[in-house]
Amino acid sequence: MGKVKTRILGLEDVEKEQKKEQKEKAAMKKMAKKKEEPKEKVEVKAVEEKKEEKKVEPKKEKKVVKAGAKIRGKKYQKVVKMFDKTKSYSLKDAVKLVKEMKTAKFDETVELHLNVDETGLKGEVTLPHSTGKTVKVAIVDDKVLEKLESGKIDFDILVTHPSFMPKLAKFAKVLGPKGLMPNPKAGTISPKPEELVKKFSGGTMRWKTEPKFPLVHQMIGKSSFEDSNLVENAKVFVEAVGMKHILKAYIKSTMSPSLRVDLQK
Image (tube, helix red, strand yellow):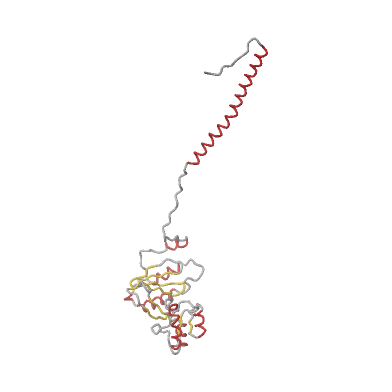
């Protein structure tokens, strides 16, 4: 049952006062409702915002790059179009193309890469036009031994007198893997090491396959060489390895792609 409102009848002043109080209470109730309304709206808005925050945005797709994949530059992509990857070129044509594909500002090295029929192949060769690289040959003495002791290696070929071999034995683990340990087979031990210095400084090179793979990599000159000089150097090196051992041959410069060479042409 609702609240019973009492009113004193017959007394006009009291009745007016009661009416006035009732109006004031009604007005206060309306004002209270108006004040509460914005608060309710704010609460509703906050709830809606929270709901929007809970919405999970779709994940952006990430570009997947395959492991080991190389991203080639524009210059490389341009020179690749200059030759046919499925074709084998004569040595003369291959040298010409490699020189035309030069992109670096420095004098690029020209390399010959051979797939051979067995590991363990090695030998010596003197190229008719050298390689364009200065070869530093050192003779073992007390100063060289001191440098080796400190871990410094500043030579390309090491030659020695037989009397120093016992002192070099302790450095075999360092020099051996680098192909720098003097030994009779490589022709780097002699009673007259000075003559070996002249020999190797004059362009005589030692070559061999990789330790575990039947591959031979050899520098045959610079891109600044005449085409004919590079061709002659390549022919002499191929003869040193032996055509019977060569399965495939490729030529390239420092920054260029490799071209397959048909050595029979």
